[in-house]
Amino acid sequence: MSYHEEDNSGKILLAALAGAGAGIIAGLLMAPDKGTATRSKLGSAATKYSGQLGEQLSKYGEDLDAKFKGYIEKLEDMGITGAGSKLKLKGNWDEAKGKLKQQYAQLTDEDLEYAEGQGDELVGRLQNKLGKAKQEVVKLLNEL
Image (cartoon, rainbow, N blue to C red; front, side, top):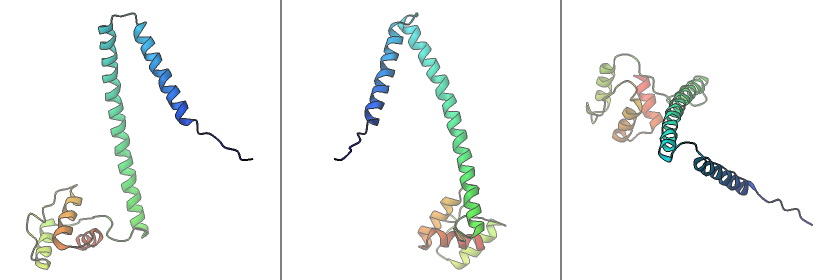
């Protein structure tokens, strides 16, 4: 005789949603204010809480991004991800551009345009122009 366990999670979720929907409808029907006033209150509450939710999500996103970057740096420092997994431009960028142009004549000023925080775009352009893998390009730039 075999034992077969049913998965009731879908039914439970559907019941919870149905109950919540019924509660909302009952609350609207029994509301002490007129419909327009109730809708206005609901709208302002939704606006207020959506703004707070957006702020919280933005904060958590920034925190996660910072932690992730920190972990990547640690892995690279430990030698787990290998050299060239993170772009670390140091020194004068104009000098580095000159060296790159000497090594790779096909590169233009537009290809080598760099602004702080836009390292991924630079690496992408150089990958396309030089036909090299991302890790090779990052390593090349870090060694300049």
